[in-house]
Structures are given as structure tokens and as C-alpha cells.
Length: 80
Image (cartoon, rainbow, N blue to C red):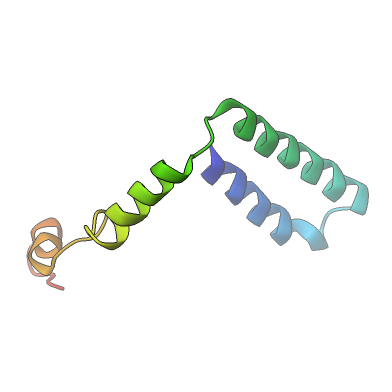
């Protein structure tokens, strides 16, 4: 959901030159409401969870790939 909102903000920025000010403000307000809705409907992250995620990403290298893992994902003939 946040990715969609982010992309909508990017699209809005791109459209600045072709939109009237009031339309830009209207779309901005709608996006702000969507962000608020997401923030109100999803649980907040506590310090313990944040630190666990930080450790997993930094120290345990989760969400990263070793060279051999990358090579196994790429099509034949394309190596890292």
C-alpha cells in the first residue's frame, strides 16, 4: 500500500506542470489521507522489533544475495 502511495506522489510531482494548483492540492490531500489511513490501520513498530529487523538486515544479511545465489537466479549466460 505504501509503495502505491509513494508512486502516486511521484506521479503527482511529474504532473505539476500540467495540473492547476487546486488539483495538485486536492490530490495531495487525498494522498495524505491515504497515508494517515495506513498509519492508523497497521501496528506501530516497537524498539525491540526495529532492532531485530535492523540486526537481520545488517548483521545476518537477510534480503541480500551471495554471488552464487545471484548466479542461480539469473538466466543462463548472464553471470554477475
